[in-house]
Image 1 (tube, rainbow, N blue to C red):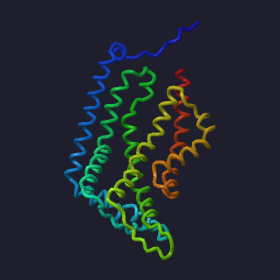
Image 2: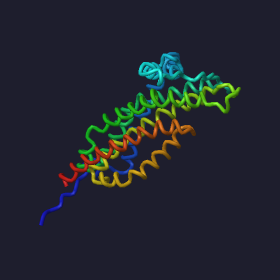
Image 3: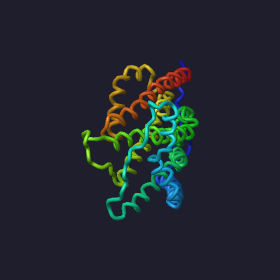
Length: 273
């Protein structure tokens, strides 16, 4: 009769009282918040560069996405829609400035914020779980930044092009005008959620390494996943099919990639088990 070995938690996790956990969580949150505030202040200071080259740069004809598709073929050449961006409320410029500073600060501080989060939860994990999650901070940070870049250079230009160029009729006389807050809000929705969605392979890898997800399970529920992906794309994007498809397609490819990752991770789990 073989003796079953039960994974153990660290001594720090076993001996630490509940209120000590809260105290440790508080300091992790404080350090993560300080990192976010620091980067947000840097973004706030360099407002001219940020708004000229990053926020409003997407409406410039020399934007990388437009130049790339025009270089590929005249048939794929697109130009930004002629949007007139205006502040419609008192203080909209200032509060939008704060909003942009917060979200760009969050993007820049994400690796450190996630590292603090990982430092808090890792002592409470079993040895096999910590082994499965080796390098997770680096991988999650890279995937998040790739998702944000994909949303900024691919989803946002096509999204603004469609929404800004949409007309009600051939004699549509409605001018294409949007508020500053609305423009920044759409740009945020095109980027931040996409960065979070790009974490799917990491989540699947971790679940497969601990035996909670199998490649057969993901294959059997592929059709259900497609429906969920389209519903999720509809929730995080404006109500138009083009933008939903632009987000849905890469998520579906991430799902297929996750099946491959799941197969390898689950095979490793089976051998260890």
